[in-house]
Image 1 (cartoon, rainbow, N blue to C red):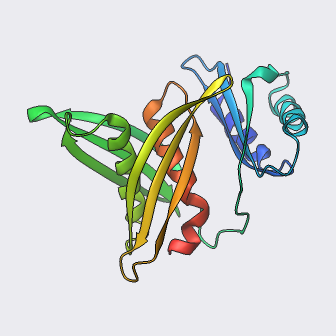
Image 2 (spheres, rainbow, N blue to C red):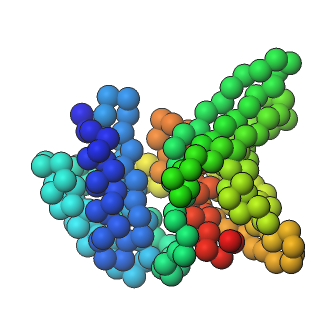
Length: 212
């Protein structure tokens, strides 16, 4: 069983690997490994990155990981350092209310503060993935209030041994009208709601300095 503090340490060490932006280690309720998702800039062979990930895992946990659990996702990455503190995911959940109303809640941490976003709709109006994605977007607009965020699509895409949650979203400056479309992704695990919220964050986190 993997301890949470070791998982956090591993995810921090992943960022130090050449041509890697970040990664996620996903475990089940018993702490067993489900998948390790690594996001690279595509400028280095996946086999070389996977080898470094295996060695990093062994240095943190003291044993080898099955290489089939590791997936390398290549994409173009903006490596400019953010002027603002990164937003960190805390939790995502749903609450059922009267009259068939569902409330999606996402909590984030930003500069040592807890930021909460909520989305409340009738269950027949919107799928839970979109409810949580919109709640995550609302949490982010509580940080950058002069921007609006629209969730366009939420999809689960098979990628080898794992599935990836991909979210496309449109962002617009409410003062100038400037904006663009972004894509975020996260390795899907048993926590669907958390995976969706993390995908929204992935699409926006590195651009927070632009939005502020």
